[in-house]
Length: 176
Image 1: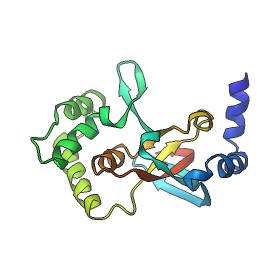
Image 2: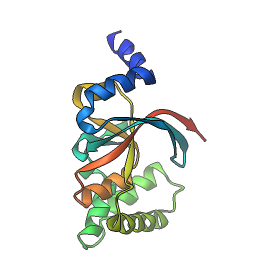
Image 3: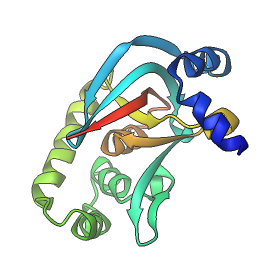
Image 4: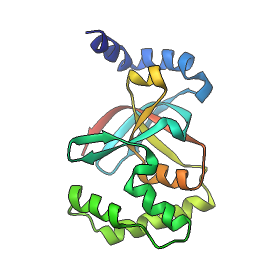
């Protein structure tokens, strides 16, 4: 019951913004003009942003047991891009397995090439780098955030040794 009440208040934008200003002050928490982000599968509506250390961000990946929260460096995305960044033979097997299992209609070769192109572009200028995170009550307890969109970008940031990244906190999602 307590968590339901807390989640209700967290989902109230005014309450979240007020508490966010206080609690996430060290992350440069800001109330922003409503910002819409096209995530290809839906539109995210955000009214808050902040700058968060990468170690406080966690991808949510499909797994045999449903969605699973993992460390960035354990994702197939990071393994692939880290091998590219270190100019090693591309470690694509986990990435291919993941996309074949959960997104069978994706053109994997094209996806890998776009990922590498994104890495090359962000290596030159990562000033616009961001991810979108889930608005959750648990974030106030541990300052950890689940990534809803931006797994490729956060993997690149981690490979480039970027320590802090801009996040947009998602208020709502309009599915396409």
